[in-house]
Length: 444
Ligand SMILES: [Cu+2]
Image (cartoon, rainbow, N blue to C red):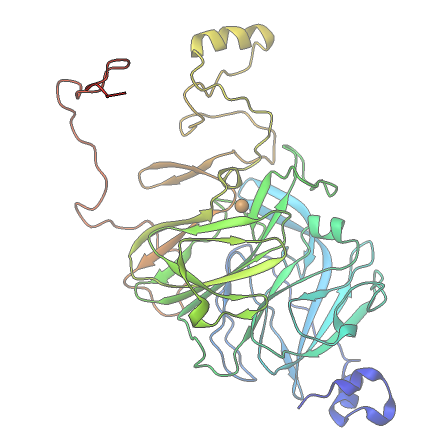
């Protein structure tokens, strides 16, 4: 059993393995680096206890090495360039080449040693959100440890005391460092592989940014008016789909390190929230829902039986969170005559385009935009424009996916006669109630 006495620094109390740990810590493991923004295949453990690994939307899991009975990881905090979707790159801060950082996977009871090297221009720390660890490992700069100065490497050592889904982020100039994208997820698998096993396990963290059109850097002092609503720092159509085999038990783990809540909705199924960053929810306390609100600074994990084949929208239900680069200043012009509007706008700005008098559907509209700016609503499906952005993707449930195959299976082949269809209207308008002419008299 792991002894926390090692952290007291009192020689007489330090256990043999902890002493060896300190010595071994001098040899820092390599820090793997990721240059891709698509979901990497699940990382099956080659040493230590076995588990069914997760996959991270547009992300990856950090490889580790065993050092005696310690699992060793190495995070490097550094500036990165993150592509939000094709056509938009943002200068963020992150870990090991990407933002958010890689998912850290371990097993309940594991002893982990996480090296953190700071290559940022200012100091940082790493806080392990939701994890039950010694206070001195909690990563709150100034309170539980000195800040990690640029160029320095610190080591966090603790036991993964309970399984579940957690997060990591700095507790050091937080406003700036979170707004710059410094965050990641931690998945601790149960030691008992028979505890609530699933066939597919997805994880991602939600974050928001204000990146003004035509710019490349988030406004780090923004408090409310964000315009990029991301899952793992990607927006639709840049977010990976969730490919699932029909009949799979599926787990989706969602962290929220943005500044607002996100009601996350899955079509075609009902699910139960089974775990939070506080731990597993007893089965007797679970209930069915189709949308679950993920509060700020929290994790919600739902389990769903994928028993309904098709292409199922999976998105935040705040409709402005499924748009890109949306501003508050867009006026509602629904019902305004397009001709009058064009005349009025033309006087003020001869090159401007009058739009939106019948809604904002823009599937057939090309709007001029500065470089590095995504359309507000975009994406194309097999039937036409999808007109989404931000926090939107698709769970693709198919009959014939191999066990660890997470490749995009393409658009769903709808069985004949199962798609909503147009009918020829009758020659005459259907009878309607006349305004002001009740069809029957009410007794007053
Ligand atoms: Cu949202």
